[in-house]
Image 1 (cartoon, one colour):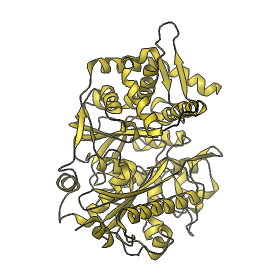
Image 2: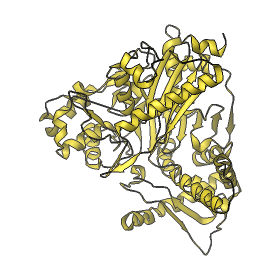
Image 3: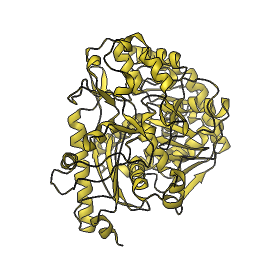
Image 4: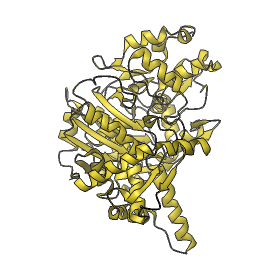
Length: 530
């Protein structure tokens, strides 16, 4: 069957992911091959002390993204999109979207990027004896209770961004277990929220005064491959105002970007791991057993099929790199030089490989926002150098920024890999940081002192992972596990490259990190002053 026929007969699967700076749609066949795509750029706003995206931006963005996908399909294959074998929605994990009985948003969407829940994090971590990061949905809910926010008594439902979009499209208040594990701790044995911890939460005085119980307002947790509803008539019209899209398409459980990242890198089996590096950066390893104790730097979440995962999540990664690249772009435009942004990024990333292994004594902190892993509630990007013994070259400058992008991540990974002795058979990289061949991959290998692989589909990202989860719902054999489905159907013939750590680079990264940790005092001063 040709591609046009596959699409025309509604046998392709669609994944849509809401990333930090881009909403992307990817259409695939039953083997995971990308057939067409669409996208829409967007940015968060910092309003009244809160990082947020408006409800209007969410729906304008997904409509524009779908429209671009539709146009791409028409241009490539001469086919009008009308249906799919399955669909999947994914988005940035965590955050807080709370609704009343009329499904009205009670307060503006509070994204993962906010670091306003320190009191809730500290108290819940102590009550549960389980790390509850600031960005988790339950931390946001409890902080709102601690703050005595008026809206909390009106809550009938709260969820993540993926859960919200899925609910509007299907009417189902559900969430994939991976995304759910970033709302509230999951009991690995049941695949559902931990009932003991729910009881402890409900017993807290601020909670017991509410007219609701936690279990009543959480979305239902589902595992990959479970049916999660169908596209309603209203949902179809929301996506495609032209009216071509038909209702009735099956949807898989909505997932978080961590879950789709694991799927996109075939990192859902025990002892596999991945590094997702874009606006934020996180590393995940599927664990053989629980950690020996609670670490504030390490989250415990799950794969989309419910396995325990150790996760180091950092709020900041490539934003500061992008800011400097845009400065170079502005300079080139002032000089009358045409700017190809892909070439500019590739040139600057590649130049980093000419830098000294320790970046020649240059240092930077990429903290656009707070960075809980290193103890920062707020951020202020900072560049510093020692004039007497630094080598201020373009190669060192770019290498420094690529190192800094992984600096906070390195702090957490050292705990996971060195202190807890967690075993990893393979570590895969994906996201914009790895787009330039060999560069981000080499630096990540130096950071973790282990081989890092990048698949040829690394640039497809989470939307591709969401499409694969949708395809798993539509195409899996009876009893076929998610790891088996990925190995047998998606990655069997997938090509990739692996880079071993270079000893000089490993030593250089470690030397850089010694200064990085000492220099956090500079960053603290920058936050206080700026």
